[in-house]
Image (tube, rainbow, N blue to C red; front, side):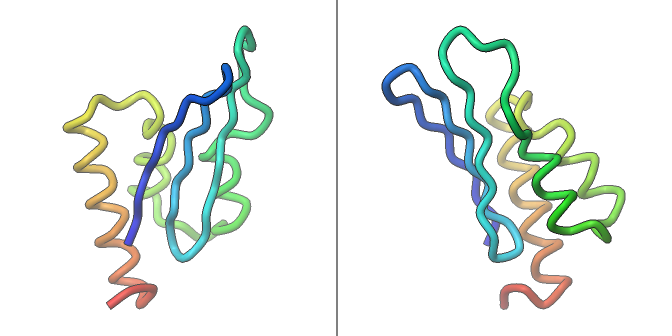
Amino acid sequence: MASYKMEIKDGILSKTLTFMGMEFTEVWEERNTHCADSLEGQVLRALPDLEESEKEILEELTAMDEDELLDAIYALTVYEKSQGEIS
C-alpha cells in the first residue's frame, strides 16, 4: 500500500514515499533551495514504465494539500493493486 510521510528533525525535512514495495526519500536541509534527489526522479528511475497518470501524480505530490495528497496516495495504491504488487 502506498504511503507518504513528512518529518522535520534537526532542521532537515524528509519526505518519504513508499510505493510498489520500495521506499523513496527526498531530503531538504535548512536554508537549501533544492533537494539533492527528488521523489519523482527516484521513482521514475526505479520504475521507468510507470503509466502517465501516475507520473503526473508524482510530479505534483510534494506540493499538494492534505485532501489532494489523500487522493493521490489512494490512486497510487490502486495502481499497485492493478500491477499485482499488493492484494
